[in-house]
Amino acid sequence: QSALTQPASVSGSPGQSITISCTGTSSDVGGYNHVSWYQHHPGKAPKLMIYDVSNRPAGVSNRFSGSKSGNTASLTISGLQAEDEADYFCSSYTDRRLYVFGTGTKVTVL
Amino acid sequence: EVQLVESGGGLVQRGGSLRLSCSASGFTFSTYAMHWVRQAPGKGLEYVSVISSNGDTYYADSVKGRFTISRDNSKNTLYLQMSSLRPEDTAVYYCVIVPGIAARWFDPWGQGTLVTVSS
Image (cartoon, rainbow over all chains, first blue to last red; front, top):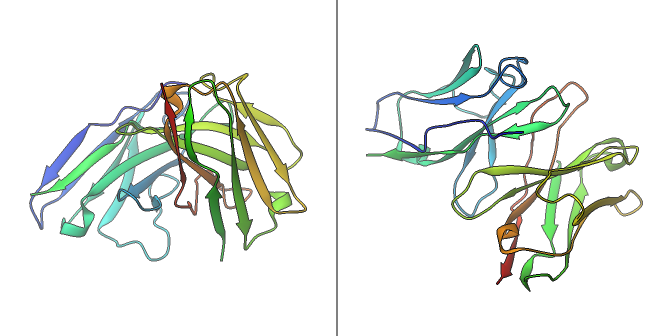
């Protein structure tokens, strides 16, 4: 299973909005509404930010939102804050009843 | 509260072996599939292995034949026996669960355990 494709880096100024893409195939992202997003600060445990494309777990800021179109899912962070600077990974359920992760995106707050 | 605590990582030479453990609490361990995911330095996450509640297993091609996943339901512990280790196995290893029968995401995550394979 090939990794999902994400941009290596995305940056934005405080208060701006940024969007991270996650591109797969019809066997994963395009075939299921089971895309999740994780925030990872180095040295800490990854944190679930979005599940099933667009759902936020309790406690996650509503500045984080998810969507999907075809084989590409997206994570949008609005009102960018310094604390949002981290690595972000997407993941998708697949037609092999397994999971595949994205290549990861480093978000920098300028 | 669900907790997953990985241990057993360390420095090992190429060709060596290591056994990782994941101690689980806060849920009925025996009824959940348990997964191992790893992240090599500067790389993305890689799905490594899974063991179902009834013992069925899956391995990524990169570790097949070298790694063995197992579980001890009496101890609420997941294991990953790694042998014939290669420098490219250097990574932080996480054990994770999918938190429900209808769920298709991983939550929570532990801090992971670092495995370093020297050449």
